[in-house]
Length: 119
Image (cartoon, rainbow, N blue to C red; front, side, top):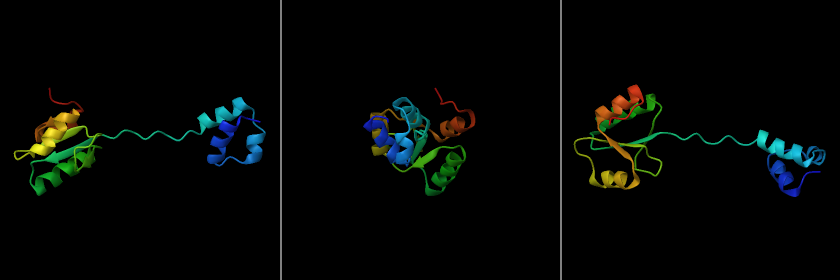
């Protein structure tokens, strides 16, 4: 019979009590690691500022097709702030404080094409 700690984990994962009782401690831990929930994949996030609604919509579609998640605020997980001609000072400040890369429309398009950020 495995230790209570590993048995509790297995119960939460839906393993039957009889199956748990038949396991050694080592076998129970092996089962825990084999059935560990997948870690969430980190997503690339981009936020836009300083664009017209039409431009923002076009850029958002481009980003989504490139596998980048579009967010409306500069979050902790935000990777890029794409800034247009009338970029909001608040978003630029937040991006700078959080170490988020700030790129132009062209910089974003280059990134989506090549996977490389402009220097």
